[in-house]
Image 1 (cartoon, rainbow, N blue to C red):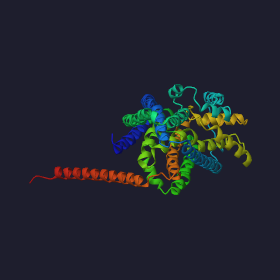
Image 2: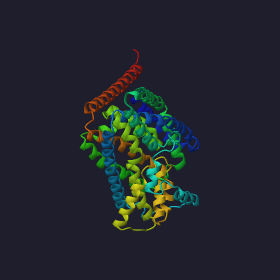
Image 3: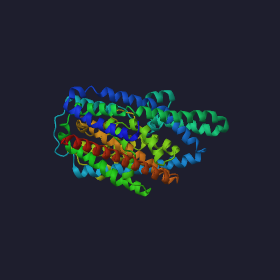
Image 4: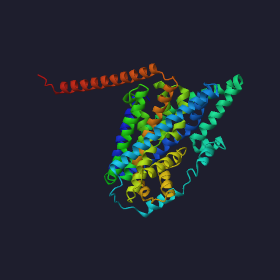
Length: 443
């Protein structure tokens, strides 16, 4: 399926899904099966795709020193980006006060679910986090879809391939072929994206209802305001540093961004985003290392949400913290949010655990549960876009970003857009001519 057509079909599926979920919730509540099928197809290809891309990418470096430099630059950027995300989330939360004078009925079931999140052990300590990124079994890690352990295994495997030298060439050729096959596999799977988008959005609207956006308007608008500020101020600044237009960049990643938004998962968009970043001018080896690693360590949208969610939870119970107390909590959130991308409702789990560990009520988590799906759509999209921009920044830092390739990519998009408008205009003119001819009277 061509890219332009796929974008159109995804957009139409989004609109149709909203309509079905709103007008026919009885039907929409059963559409989650389409979303689950599509997400399962994505998860099916994630592990072999990540493994093959990381191995072939690192093997092209050929030595540990080059990889070490790439790793240091990548994590420096991640630390800067997530720090700014915390600042933006904190600033918007203090400005808009989303939890002030908030009143809504909370069921006992929601309180029980929030309490259960506290019991979930994401990372008991920093040492546990470090230990858990090394898999005891690569088969188990692939079966569970744990991306970070897969990346760690692939890095060591690639270094071993480099150290063996010429004898490892047959293995490396096989893995390179596997990488090409998996990208082709991804293109085939993406043909089912409109069905997944339709099912996900129809189910979300039917379950939450359109009215929930009115009841939670302040917290929803606060989060999306913060996300827009982060996107068009912080990430726009990052784009300017590497001399690219944020608008042309957003245009390039529109399809994976729509997928991330509608399915509320970065996994669905990750394979296609990696493909697009290569076409955009980022070398394959940098894409293969930065994006999978960023999936666990550069969750800009989720980090921003945690800062805002923490303030919301404190504001609804009337707790005001000093600047030093806020800094301590924000640093705690930054550390505990790393490496746990595979945990369901991970942001709420981290928020509940952090509130509990500092002795604060978890009422805010119970309230956010009712609207978390809508909030998750926005933060997941920014997570994806942030990781895509990270690949460009790191590539430019390594002096390996291909500006000529980026210009060619943008020109190709502009040509497709002009051709599409020309065809549409021709169809409209033809239809008008037909109608005028049919209205002519015969003398």
